[in-house]
Image (cartoon, rainbow over all chains, first blue to last red; front, side, top):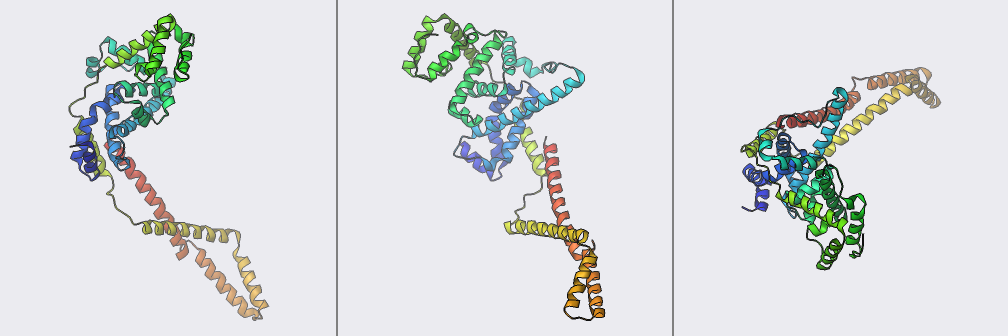
Length: 206
Length: 177
């Protein structure tokens, strides 16, 4: 059964139809949450919450748009909300205890299975990016969304998305190099090259 | 460079960029770093989920629905009427309260008495009439009178409705979570 029919049936109160939608989107939504939050247990809870919210807000869904972008938008906003709350509670807790908030304790079995050293390094670097930068990378790479779809999820303009994606890649490269920028980044040459890319398209010299 | 990674440059733009990269070692190093990141991101795996994810989501939905108040369709005119009653009764209570505080009973009595005397009514009769009026007005403004009861009821219904809505929504979210 196609997605539109499932949504229509779910809107009419058919819980089996909604369960089929959850089944179809559980992995992408969970992965979005996991990459955003960096913790398996929190990600599972966030993904469940995103589906619950989607169910409750189903009447606001516009069938002319893709269900996946609408659902990712709910999940992404919920994750950003959780990160802001976490930041607040961590800063409060730290101020009381002086504990390092970045220490999340031992990895659970699922995280251990997923994360070899390379995977851990990537996720660690990803978690160091600002959440809006992290989100566009996740949507681009793990959800395989086009620019138009990412714009629909994040509600930003095309030029803002281009800049954000580029900066996110640069920052991630820098974090993966242990905080060392490439010489081009350090000299601000990349920005010059990119201005030319977006401008007259002429590349002459750095 | 980012657009080139996503294959969004035209062939002319791509050629210009590659031409530049061939001549500029600084940009070439940067391009290599971006390509490396792009490759790492593309190769990053999707995380698997536990098998009971779907039943857990449906359980949370059922919990929410089980605890939430049944959706009752209230006609628009009823909502408007209830709101109007609450607003009017609250406003009436405020007006009566203001009169009783700022416009003393004695003033009402003197005004009434003067008006009746000017109209040529005998003093004893005017006095009796205004005293009766004064006691009636005092009765009306007392909290146990109909006006007071109606206005307080309106306010109570409004506050109770909002409180009930808040508590049930909060409890449902807590249970579902």
